[in-house]
Length: 297
Ligand SMILES: Nc1nc2c(ncn2[C@@H]2O[C@H](COP(=O)(O)OP(=O)(O)OP(=O)(O)O)[C@@H](O)[C@H]2O)c(=O)[nH]1
Ligand SMILES: [Mg+2]
Image 1 (cartoon, helix red, strand yellow):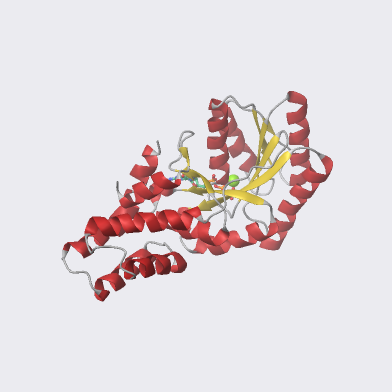
Image 2 (tube, rainbow, N blue to C red):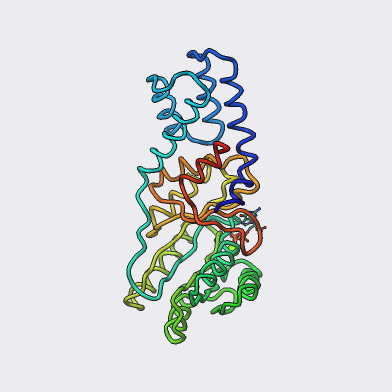
């Protein structure tokens, strides 16, 4: 389970946990060590709040000054922080309609390909909707992933209204009996306001004209963006009914620690982790396994 994630987190471990262990190998742990630890946690993209929370607890002396005790305390803290994040609550209704959103280049289309594969392997009847009608070749890119997984795509032409493509896709899913519709969306329009309006329209049209569907949105975040990804994510979370997140490119970053503050600040659970560029490079996210992988155990 999450084997690829463990391998993927190697860069993060090198930058974070190895120096941390070195800190404690010197014996006595005083205020200076705690401060260095604070710096390390912060530079590993754990964020200001989470770092503060961890360091405070460690200062309170719930540790004996031994390396393994510190790591145990750290593990407990990280899990505590994540346990405050609300759980995933999928909406009721059928078919399940997941609108994949996020800024440009984070890995939305690839994630959809991997999700199609994931759901297909679990006997779901999947249909994809090519609602990025903005970027050149976006439709063809989605079709390529669909071919790899053997799932149908509903598409229109470039420049078509994404909401009408989404509407057609759900109609088609209903007539074919598909249970899972995954909608690809654009990452960039002329302005973010336009993008948000376009995404809002997709939701408005689907929820008013297709009653009874299980409509939700998953936000895709590139782990490499570190703390910036939180800022980028806020506007999506404020505008759309986002129920969960997918964090991508965990195989190519040393900033995987960002998964902690992302969840804490956006108050949304991470559902899947992207760990590469093939259809099977997506793993369901498990908090305990993530923390173990982060701490190298
Ligand atoms: N290493 C690695 N690369 C990834 C992962 N997910 C996506 N990528 C790469 O990131 C790049 C962008 O991926 P896309 O899926 O096109 O991203 P997008 O969000 O759909 O991009 P736009 O449609 O332009 O907004 C591609 O080169 C992908 O192969 C991942 O988990 N790991
Ligand atoms: Mg795309």
